Each structure stands twice: as structure tokens, then as C-alpha cells.
Amino acid sequence: MNPNGQNLRFLLEKSLTLKQLKQVHAPIISNGLHHLQILLLRQVLHSDFTFSAATARYVHLILHNLKNPDAFSWSCAIRYFSLHSQYETAFSLYLKIKRLGLCPSSFAVSSALRACARILNELGGISIHAQVYKFGFCGCVYVQTALVDLYSKLGDMKTARKVFDGMPEKNVVSWNSVLSGYMKSGDMEEAQVVFDEIPNKDVVSWNSMVSGYARMGNMDKAYFLFQQIPQRSLASWNAMISGYVECERVESARGIFDAMPLRNNVSWIMMISGYSKCGNVESARQLFDQMRERDVLLFNAMIACYARNSQPKEAIELFNQMLKLEVNIQPNEMTLASVISASSQLGDMKFGLWAEFYMSEHGIELDDHLATALVDLYTKCGDIDRAYKLFHGLKKRDVVAYSAMILGCGINGKAVEATKLFEEMVNADICPNVVTYTGLLTAYNHAGLVEEGYRCFNSMNEHGLEPSGDHYGIMVDLLGRAGQLDKAVELIRSMPMQPQAGVWGALLLACSLHNNVELGETAARNCFKLEPDKSGYYALLANIYASAARWDDERRLRKVMEKKGFAKIPGCSWMDSM
DNA sequence: GTAGGGTTAG
Image 1 (cartoon, chains in turn yellow, blue):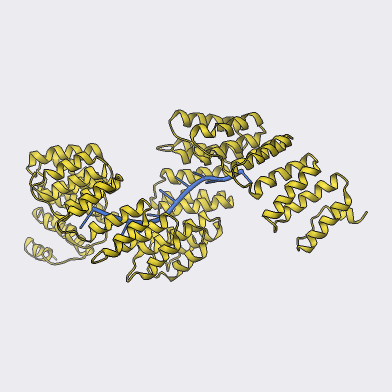
Image 2 (image 1 turned 90 degrees about the vertical axis):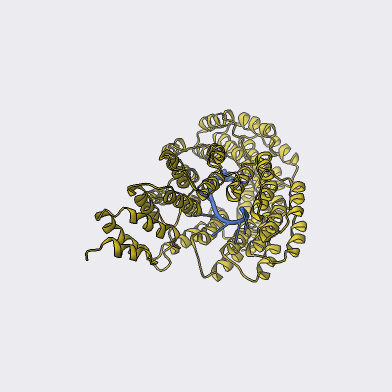
């Protein structure tokens, strides 16, 4: 075949597959028919090809091969990347078009603005805004609307409003942009005023109101508006589900879900995450099983549900299913973060090493979330050095990363390092949360540092934090192990909430270590009441009786245990033989 | 212009 310009052009005017386009590309280059590349590019950009890294590379290749770069081709490319959520790329192409001295089209400008809005690139957005006047797009409703949306997303409602008020022509999208800005900033009153003023509200205007009230937790108002929507869209229904899930009214969410005329993956995933939040794993799985078109996000939702509800084996099983050839869904950063958390619960160090290898093989970036999950896994497996290496490589150390590392030091007996990390974190203006304190208290507990533990516990309110039952539990354990049983009891009595079994359990353990029968009985009575099916508490009390040589009580307790069907505890055998 | 999945808890 010796293609000439004529038949290549003929080919390019048809609708081609990506493969065909690539076959055409080589002869275009080798025959020096550079002007045809523009046609080629347009074919790619206007086609419905699903976005892939390969297509992106291809678009870049054509762009940079253009003999005479033209504003139109580059503008098309900017729009293409922005439409496919490749905001960084879209913005950097915009910078390049400027460097080439070309004048971007109005849709290139609005696409670049959209990109800046999505990635909250304030500086980039503002500098494009300055150029808007130079290029003469003051009257362009698309560009102006993109500006309104940019400032709305940046939370600068003053500027958003100024641009909006200055628009010679507005469409419903302009109105909706300013409306969603007020919603996001929580100004419901102004949002309501804008909503009432919109000359021709569309379904997006209604949905913004519904999801705004839903986000605030005002579900009555959200439902009231939802009922009045003339033509509900999928997003209207999903906004209601999302609102109910957010305020943990999962049954109400289910009611909406069941009543929907049509559902998409978003609806299913939100329901699954709703069940996940309230610990209803079975219902989540039932929905997952009903869903036929499973994508990576659906798998992620279900895997995360298992991981956060302490079912790590199921999480990993589902992950393995996902990788099977007949399913063949590529996991991404979020899948791996959940699965690493699951393997941390199992203490499976090998999985972490495999995951790091898998990520490098498949080009999955080790982001901060993933690195934090790995820090947790490696510290739980005792490899503190490997954890530190990851921790130091983080782009940004947040409260979760610090908490994971502090706890990691804590369970590895490094109380001094935990303290150091905590100070470092506070100095960096990162606010500790209740989990951070769990880690720190664990560190002191592990090292038996009563004074430090007390000080730490008491300093929680300096950061506006109320100690939870868990924190009391750790403190009781710390005081109890140190033999300060009176102080431990005093602490329990001071608790503003009902002490859970774990708190009494910590006291019971302390009593068995320090042979205190009377307190031990009190602690045990509470444990039995709160967790009647746990044999461990009975065994501890039995040991207390035995070491105090109170054999009658001991034997009585063993009988109760047998009645309850608890397995015989080894250690009573020598008693039997006496 | 509206919508979904991730990391820390003796």
C-alpha cells in the first residue's frame, strides 16, 4: 500500500477505531503530511473512546509532532483532558499554548478554568482570569460561568458574585454555579434567595438545594424539596441517599433506594458504604451480590466495608476474586489501602511486601494514604525501620500518619520516640485526635510510665478532646498493672459514661496480678453482666480465688463455667488430681 | 453546574 494524501484524508473523514487511527498515523508522518495530523487529532478528541493512559500519550505525541502548532488543535486537547478529569494535564497544556504564543479559544479557557476549579489551583485560576480580559472573553457566557464556578469552588463567594453580577448574559448553568457556591459555604439563606430568583430552574438547581440541605443534615427540608422536583434525575435520588447515609439513617436511605425507578453504580455504592458505616456487613454484601455490573469502585466499597468492620479475611478473599481473570478488574490505590489495612489486622507482613512490588509493577503510585496503611502494617509486624522509612517519605504528614506512627512506636515499646513524634506533630500545628491519644497512652502503658500516662490523659481536654471509654480502659490498665488499684477504681468511678466490659476487664486483670480478691469480685461481676459469654473473665476470677487459696469459691466458679459450656481451662488439672 | 470507593483505635 502506498497511501497518498488524498486517500488518507478520505480515511480520516470517516469514523475510525483507535487501532485504525494508529495505523493511519505512521504513513502521515512518513509522508510528511503534517497538515493531516490535525484531522487525526480531531478524530481522537471527538470520539467516544474511553479515556486511557495510552490515548493520552497518543494525543501528546500528535500534538508535539505538529509542524505548525495551531490554537485550535491545542484548544481541543485542553478541552479533551479537562472533560476526562485530567486536570493537571489540561492546565499544563494551557500553560504551553501560552508559551507557544497562541491564542486559546473560549472553550480552551473555560476548560482550563474548570481544571483549576477542580484541583483548587487558585493561582492558576486567578492568572487565567486576568487573561480573560486580554483575550476578550468578557461577554462569553461559558468563560464567565467557569469563572463563577472557580470562585465558588475556592469558597470566594464575594468574587464569584461580582463576576456573576457583571455577566451581560446568564444561563441556568451560571445560576447553578453561584447557587452551589453558596451551598458549599453553608450560606443557606443566600442560596435560597438565589434559588427563588432563578428564572428557569432545571433539575440541577433542584438537586443542588436537596444535596445542600442533605449535607447539613436537614433531611426534612431536603425531602420536602425532593418531593417538589418536577422531573427527578438519578442525582436527585442519589442526593437523598447520600444525605440519609451521612446522618446514619441507613433504613431511610434504603427506602429511597428501593423506591428509585432507576439506579446506577453511585446508588449501589452509597448504600453499601451506608451499611458499612453502621456495621451491617451482611446487608452490604447482599447488595454487592445483586449488582451485576461491577466496577472497581463497587469492589472498593465492599472491600473497605470488610476491612473497617474487622473482617480482614473476607476483604482479602474479595480482593483475590477481583484479580481473577474472569473478573479482571484492576485494583487501584484505594483498593490496596483497604487490603493493606486488612492484612495489618492479620499481621501479614508478606502481603505488604507483595503490595509494594505489585504497585511498582502496575504503576500504582504509593501515595500518602497507602504509605500510612503500610506504616501501620509494618509497625504491627515489628519492622519499625521499614515503617520509619515510609513515614519519612510522606509528602505531607497528617494526623492519621502521626497517629499510626505513634501507636507503632507504642506497641514496640518505644515510648520516648512516641513522645517525640507527638511533640513534633503539635509543633507542626497538627491537631491530635482521640486516636492519637490512644496511641500515645498505649506507649506509656507499654512502658509502665504511670506519671507520663496520667499527664497525657489529663492533657486531652487541652486539645478539646473528651477521653473515650477506650482511653479510660488504657489508664485503668496502666494504673492497675502498677499496683495502684485504688486510683484505678477512683478513675472508673469518675467516668462520665457507663464503663464498658474492657474497663472492668483491665481492673480484673490487675486484681489477678496483685491478688486482690474483693476488688476482683466487683470487677468480675461487672464483666459477667456486660459480656456473659466471654470465658476469659471467669478464668481470671478463678485464678484470683486459687491464689488466695479460696478453693470453695474457686470450685463453685468452675462449675458455673462448665454449665455455661466453657472449655475447661488447663491449670485446674493439677487441682483435680489433689 | 449535581453523585460513588482509601489510611490510624491497649
